Image (tube, rainbow, N blue to C red; front, top):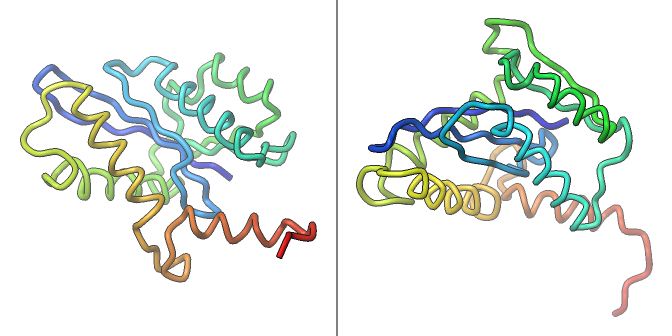
Length: 177
């Protein structure tokens, strides 16, 4: 199951919207995308990126095996996204309107992003002036989150390490010594 949502970041040039997709199994951020508008591409672009990444690493998402869960925002209920999910063989799942607990994992990730990336100067010094500033900081934060941030729910390993161990255990072919 993948969960998805987007959040807002204030810049000197106006609002920047950042959408994330998180794999529930490993809590890995499998894709993200920043834009200056809230049109459907904000949520379809990270979906295409996530599918491409999984396929590229030899972990193609099987037909009807993946659930794509989101809130009931207009971007996630759009015909374009729904058709794209159908073409990819992904089952859509949309939470009930006004129920923040329905997408709690994604709300938590958005909160961590705002706290650990946007409201600190660790990933970007000074105020965010443009979307490029937000993208640069977000890229650094996602890399840190996926590869170095330890998660108590994953036995204190990073999401990338947790996934790597899972896929290694699935590989039953004999390996050279």
